[in-house]
Amino acid sequence: MDQFLRLWRGVLIVVAVSLLLTPLLPEPALVIAGSTSLAPLAEAAAAPLRVALGGRVEVAALGSSEGLASVRRGSADLALSDLPLSAPGIERAAIGQVAIAVIAAPGLPRSLSREQLRALLRGSVRDWRQLGGPDVPVRLVLRAPGSGVRMLLERYAGGALPQRALVVLASGQVAPAVRSLPGAIGFVEAGFAPRDLTVSVNGLAPSATAYPLRFTAYALYRPGDARAKAALAILQAVARQRGEAP
Image: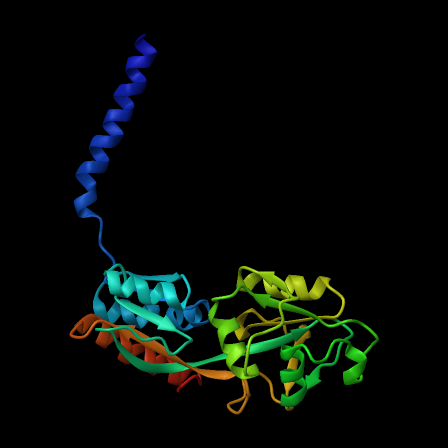
């Protein structure tokens, strides 16, 4: 019985201390939510944002659509999107660029033309020997429907992507799947692309300004939000420093 009472006394002390300290815990000065592909930009801007806004900066890579939803319901100050999303009562500004890298399994071609890439995305090329590669079936590795990367690829290909593809849920799962699957070709934000798997497009690497799979990225925020507007200016400046200006 004494042991039981001591246990509950300890629990009550912890709860009481937690309740006393909760009002003292600092709230984040800024919450940024949105695209996985733009999380590195947000992280790079976190230090100057902390200095400018005088507090903690929280970055949540939830996806572009969920980032916009977070701003609309007030749980985030700023959403970063690799898609031109819009919503009533929400302002949008170009903030930088995002590059989607093409990666292919070992032994496959390390360079593709724009036309070859579109043919692969549309499913009209089914075997790598059609492109001068080995006699291996093409296996697409794609993010799930609704992801920003997949929607950008659909825009680039000019229509829906083939249904017969290996679907992965997270950016970090694309490269391991491509590496382990013969004939695989995948598409992922440049920051998640291993150098030894990366394929050039029209002779250009993802870092090149004229790389075909570079898209404008956006920030979305509520009108009149001074913190969001200040953060937008800093994010745009950091994007320029990183060579990602829109």
